[in-house]
Length: 204
Image: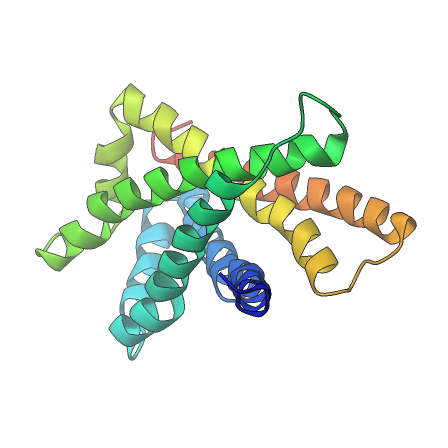
């Protein structure tokens, strides 16, 4: 792969991870948060999302295609990268390694989640509180969701740090340190929302 093409792909990979994928993640977690407020409110929020005009076009163009590119190129980066944590052990080197590991977990989780929800909906199932309630009634599924949510929020939050560096937003050590604190805060906040929401489906 030529250096110019790889530079372009890495920029696109970074951009798609924040817009639109990251934006969709935040919207998705926001909708899930309605489960904390009760079955009726979650069902109303889910029905609103299902009734959006041009929903299928938006799902394909703004969610699935960007995720496919981000995932495929992310796997390329993960398997060709030289992780040097054993030699240096710096915080950022470990974050780089965890970013790649979490990316693989997220890909598996998203594939399973889409299979359980979107494909089921395509065959007539209704995406509502009862659907999620039935899925996470299995303790193994609940644990898998908690792991998947945590991996997803970490991958996004840590990816924000990389995005800021890649796009020249944080160029000094001080700005990168601040970005680290911001990414930790984003991870903590989104993880709380995600896990608290999924636990609402089991009555916790």
